Image (tube, rainbow, N blue to C red; front, side, top):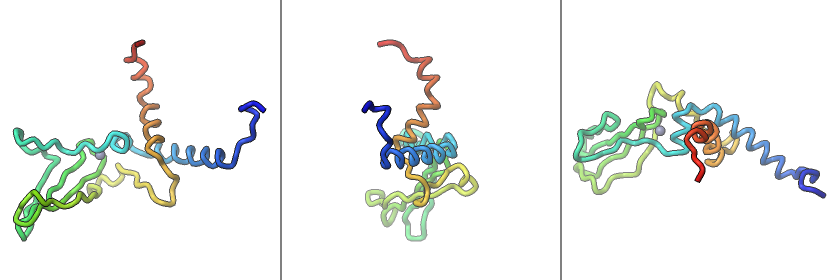
Length: 142
Ligand SMILES: [Zn+2]
């Protein structure tokens, strides 16, 4: 039996359905979210030689620690924050925690457990689909 005449297995059918549902979900992502989910967030570049960027802020807490807040410069709505060590000592900073910027929540489609399983490879495929024409234009034969 040739490959094309072979009956579709249940696993292939399920994978096809998952893939279609994932593509539909990814199509809901604003471009900023698709970029951040595939390329990583664009957190502020903290360079001691330069002024601190507007996407970074610090708030002094009552106990002398600092809450440091960074907002994604791609404006995908994500921010992250963590507390400095006691007395503003930065060598013992906590883990990053994440949130959505108030008023920008619509810029980030939250993936819930009940929704389709979306793999990073699905998201890369969606991004490259959108880049395909530009890649073809710039590509040269090796
Ligand atoms: Zn981002």
